[in-house]
Image 1 (cartoon, rainbow, N blue to C red):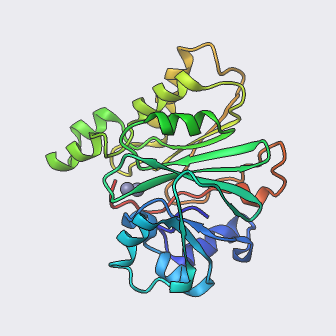
Image 2 (cartoon, protein in one colour; image 1 turned 60 degrees about the horizontal axis):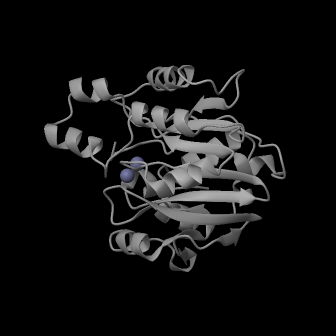
Length: 259
Ligand SMILES: [Zn+2]
Ligand SMILES: [Zn+2]
């Protein structure tokens, strides 16, 4: 499981909705300390005793004000150092965002790979490297630029979101994906859409527009999904060696105070 931004009750319910028992979850990977990613972490670790993995810097920024996280669940990982969990090789990499540290995850089993990256203000060479290497890409497509500019957010918040330590716009994500996409990318999931400055339709339209200007992709490949903020995503099963379909389930945190 990646991040814990919703209540334990919701986690259990949403997993049940897609026939995944909670006991099949082997651990929690944490990207950063913003509330929309860790709101449910204290209760979840205490109720399930699941190990939770992130870097020392992220842990330091969490445990100073989340004192009820079960201490024996805390696992420290290092950037760019693979570790093994539930049959997967997992590697954390840094992204640029306005938290003490924010990380993305590259997860692989044999030749089947996914990259999960939300909450980033720019696409660094490191991010591009891990996204290019994945079959399944889960990437932020946070806001529509016009909706943000014309919206009601205060000036400082608009500036923060647009900055290179904020979030990726639909256009940034779409242009980047259109540049790097190739036959090895089987699935794209647009994630972390702003509730106020985006809609699934607008995000998808922006991506399709960028893709239409390129020769590739064609004929429904790669498969594109937009992850809903409030409901579980359909099960995505990757071909190749990733045999346990349950493991490929992805769910987006429900609420997003950092927008
Ligand atoms: Zn977030
Ligand atoms: Zn954030």
